[in-house]
Length: 262
Picture 1 (cartoon, one colour):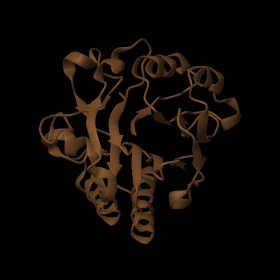
Picture 2 (picture 1 turned 90 degrees about the vertical axis):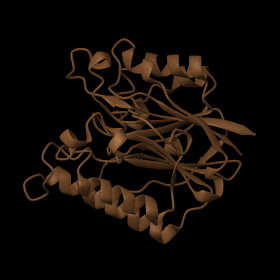
Picture 3 (picture 1 turned 60 degrees about the vertical axis):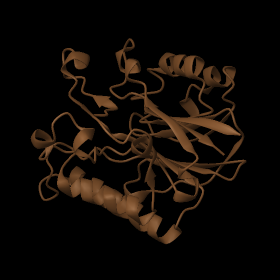
């Protein structure tokens, strides 16, 4: 039975509850993974989502920062949460569907503004977080798994509006790209979005700073859907819903979708 999964950095689920409800109503994914919910679990606006049929969920949260949640029409059970790099942040939660697929929802640290861990602690935390993700994948050898989320790195040259101009900008520096590649290789993860859309510029984030983000189009592909090789060939219909970035009071991220015939 096919199911459609979406991932979206919502940048405050309580502030943008209406946008989440609109996406669920218009697109009706079976599973929606949210990042940067910025809410304690007990204050998440789940009633509105339950009314739309999303009666299953797992979440980790904290006041005002970070936070991850998996909403689902399909029954699921919690499959753990990790505190990589020992930050004490709500940045990961996992759930297992009845078909045996485990979904990992990640919000990787952004890393601050300066790509030098010697002067920017946040950048060091980002690299350490990715190293722990790599080590977990290497040890666990995940199977029948999907990894999604705001990984805060645009790895390919065509995942950013200007490879040359962003080489020294956090999210596209060579050291970040290498750390992400090591994480991907450790779990043999397949980048489902680029499996489906192998060529061309592709973005999921546009800065709030641009007066007209759509016209400037200085985007980056920071949001990802990966799958283990045993199920990656079942994935198809990948898409990024760019128009959502233009909704009223939007997140600076657009949702990313994929369908799995499993």
